[in-house]
Image (cartoon, rainbow, N blue to C red):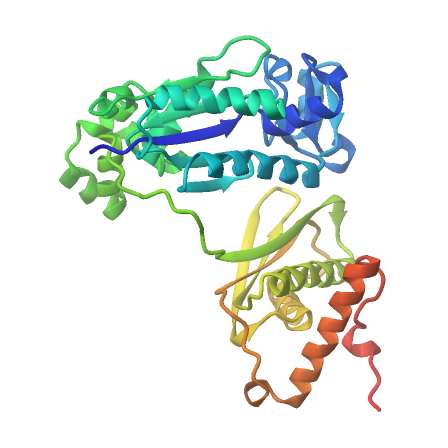
Length: 393
């Protein structure tokens, strides 16, 4: 029996939540994001603002130029997370298999439900609107790939200043026909570089791609070509999974003004490393590969990484490695626009004293005490001193 997969996407989620917080925003052009003077970008924008060409990820300064009178609303991430969880709770009450893929998106497997899928989607959409005051669009198909694209098609067909509230159903057997006229860029796995190469081969739509043989595409793109050929025909056997393993944890910051000062960059890396370490310990994880991310003033972005001899969840170990990577890649005095720290190769932390040694175990107990104090009194309540500030007894 064909599956019935529902993909739900909350329409302009951040803006919808802000309209619930402030009714004066309804129907007005506004954007959620950072201020233009701090190099903020648009996280989400209202449908009224989109009429002027405002889009997510656009620099806020540009958004304000093309949309006179645009109101800028600072983000309230905690509120968004709380509202998102209320939506996901309703999805989990609907079906057992729910896969949340972002704060405002999820897949739901409704294969076991006897009601027609469009009816299920309509009831769910009405429930979320009536109980939470949120608009959403839904795509329905026999697999995750087509369901998500169906949602995108439904949202793109909307007109005017109001959320689309679309429901788009792709019947079993009609997957390839539904995909055929769509731009090839809408297919998962086709990024800008791949799209350029496909255009050189006179492949512009998903149908064009489906008409090429799997063997031909494999010769040009390797295994990725085989995957694209299958997706272009609407084939996707991935199940709806209820949990995803965390692959990495990272923190980054974009400076309001480019930073050249070595001490400022060091202090920022240490602060970011502490945030990464705290998130690791909260999740009971440790990592083996530390990575830094740097963006220069010309927007060139580079990453560098180093693998540790054993996994860690300790701020100091992460910071020392990150600083070493920074010293290797950054010429002294070169300005930095963005800097970030991350760690991957995650797994359960090792705790045995015989593996780490008595001093390391003391450091872990100290770190646990610092975490407790910072949780209780705030992040700035107490900080570990830098190595040169410590005194031996």
